[in-house]
Image 1 (cartoon, protein in one colour):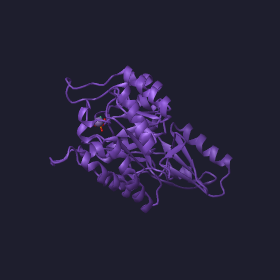
Image 2: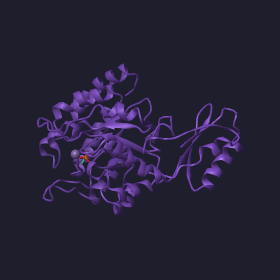
Image 3: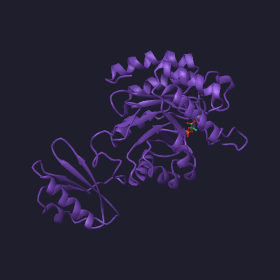
Length: 337
Ligand code: PEP
Ligand code: MN
């Protein structure tokens, strides 16, 4: 349920409503708009007696929330969530541009890429140190050594680091080195992991599982939000379909469909979404046109030598060439890059 306070409600009346709702065993989430406050009532499935709430001074009306996600939805939180990152705000007018290799492979590789993507205009650096690979024989990532190299790249460039955390017991370690914790597609419904990142204050980049609906993605975000971490960015990275010419099918629909339901920023990943570097540019432009708040793009100085996802990685110069095109589309839809 959400409780809409009237425009004349005093802070004391609002507090009385909050105290009463909490005394009934529910949690509250207050959103203060310019004109009025909205109190989200979060709890178990047992409904609160709306007639009783509506009798309280300062209350205008109550509404039931029909969606299974509450904190992620627009009812409780109508304003877009802005997540501070490196002096910018993810979800704000300016697009977030996260770029870097699929995996951290060496000191030279990550530093060269970090400098190049920064030069081109990236606002954050990506790179996996713990890699979720389909085969146990594939490169599994550099682990702690990779995190240390990412920290060095952060020191050298100032770019915040986005890197994947694969297990609850890794969260505190990865959080010491990275500014943003990535939850990979394969872990979107690893509920213990979601609860663990929910207990940190780090922004989380939550990727859509390759076989998950948008509602399931929002419910996974709800896990993180309900643990007290309100900084969640959703990421569309393509889903599995019958199509074979691309690795995944980038679901451009996901962008407006999520934006219509949630205040959380939506980031597009055209690299995993397509699986081919030639398609990354066009799909990036489409994602920005569709209203994405940012992009996460795989970039490698020598894609042919990459230990993972070389086929879908842009060479650094190709990444730089994409920026003016992205800027033109961003301008056309009222965004900045
Ligand atoms: C990645 O970002 O390199 C990655 C493994 O992505 P996903 O979880 O979307 O497959
Ligand atoms: Mn990858």
